[in-house]
Amino acid sequence: MAEGDRLWTIRGGEKVNVPATVAGIRDVLVGDQQRDFLDEVFSANVHTIEQVMQDWIVRIASEPEDEETFAQLRARDQDTE
Image (cartoon, rainbow, N blue to C red; front, side, top):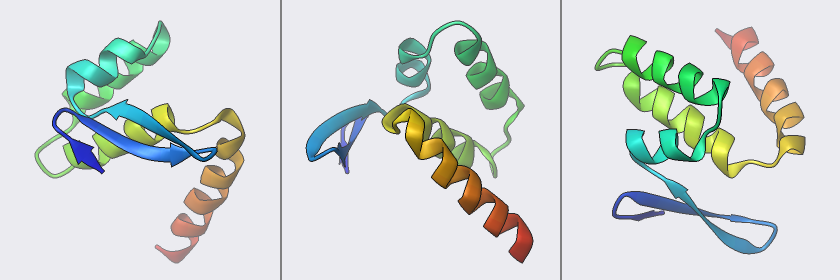
């Protein structure tokens, strides 16, 4: 759900706010993550920027143990392409 320049989701039964702007996402990332994010943003075009932003928002809002589920979903999506 959106609230201005932030989004929110529910994780572990609690409301979690996540940034919804390039600057907001950049500011919560550290080290190499910041560089990787900005590289993806600056490499995106008008057709791909939304997906880049959504991917990083999911990373921020997710728990480390969610990555296995995401990897399985990505593999399934690639099999159907």
